[in-house]
Image (tube, rainbow over all chains, first blue to last red; front, side):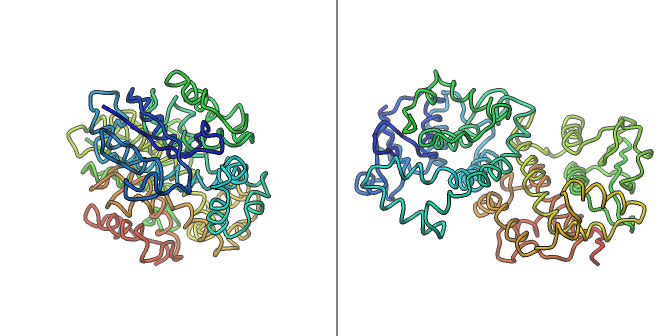
Length: 231
Length: 231
C-alpha cells in the first residue's frame, strides 16, 4: 500500500499546522499506517486538483483520492479493519461526528480569534494575501481587530471548553480509557494553535491540559516532536 | 416492577419543566416503561431526602433510589437490557456523555438567559424566592437584567447550536436514523423552554426545528401533549 497525505504547510514547509490535517495525521498513527506527507499551500490549487476540490487534507490511498478529514477517517476505518479501531461506535459513528462538529463549530472559531495573526505571520508569502483577504471577509474586520481583545477571547475559549472539561474530570480521554478519533478531532484544534502560536490556551490545573499532554505523548510523541513556527 | 419518578413542578403541578427530568421522562418512554410521576418543588428537600441528596430527577425502582439523570439512564440501560437500547455505544457511553455535557454546559446556560424570568413566573410561590436568590447569585445580577437583551441571547443561542445544526443537516437524529439517549439529552433543554416560555427559540427553516418536531411526536406525542405554563 502507498499512502500520500497532502498537508497545509507554513513558510517553513516542516511546519504543518492545519487542525483538520492533524486529525488525519493522528488517525494514520492510530491505525499504524505510514504516509508520505507532502506540504501544500493554500494557493496551490493545481497540486490537488485531481481530488476534484481545493482543500486539504487529501489522502491518496493506492491511487484513490479521498478528501475531507471526516471522510478520510471513515475510509481508513473501512479499508483497514484489522488495525486499531478509530471508532468505538458502529457506522455512521454519529456521536463521534457530533464531537467533530463541536470541535469545528465551537472550538475552532474560539481559537481562531486568538491565533489568526500568528497564522498569518508564519505563512509563506504567496499565501499571506489570500489568507488575509479570505479571513477578513469571513470575520468582517481586519485580522488585527479580530484578535485585539485577547483576554476576552481567552475567557470565551475557557467557557467554550466547559463540556470537554466536564468529561475529562471523569476519565482520561474523550472516547474513554484510550484515545480514539473523537479525541483527535478535538486535539487537532490544539495542535493548530501549538504549531503557530506561543499564547498559552490552557491553565496547567485544567484537566484539559493533562489530556493534551497525554495526546502530545501518544504514538511515540508524534505531536510533541512536530516542528512549530513558534520555535 | 414499580417505578416512581420525582419531577420538578411549576405552580400548576401538571407542568413539569426541568430539562433533566425531561431527559429521564423520554428515556423511560424509550424503554417502554411506565412510572408514577410525582410533582416536586425546589424547596421540598424532605420529600426526596431518602435519595441522600436534594435534586430531581430521582427514580425509585422497586425500592432502589437513583438520582442524577445520567446515572438514571445508565441504571435503566443495565436493568432493562431487553428493552430498546438508550445507548448505541458500549459502557461507559463516553460520547453520549459528551453530548450530555454539551447540552448542560453550552445549551442550558444559553437558553437560561432567555427563559429565566418565565421560569420564575410559573413557579409555585414557595419556590419563587429560592429560585430568584439562587439564580441571581449564580448570574451575579437580577433576573430581569440577565434576560434584558433577548435579541443578543437569541443570536448567541443560534451560534451555540451550530454543532447540532451541522449534524442534523446530514441525518434525522443526533444518534443516527432513530432517537436515542443523546437526542433526549439535547431535547430536554427544548422541552424546558417549551413548558415555561412562549419565546420561539428556533426559526422554522432551521433543521433543528424539524428534529424537535420529530421528537415532540415520538412515543405517541408524549412531549407534545405535556402541559405548559405558556398555555
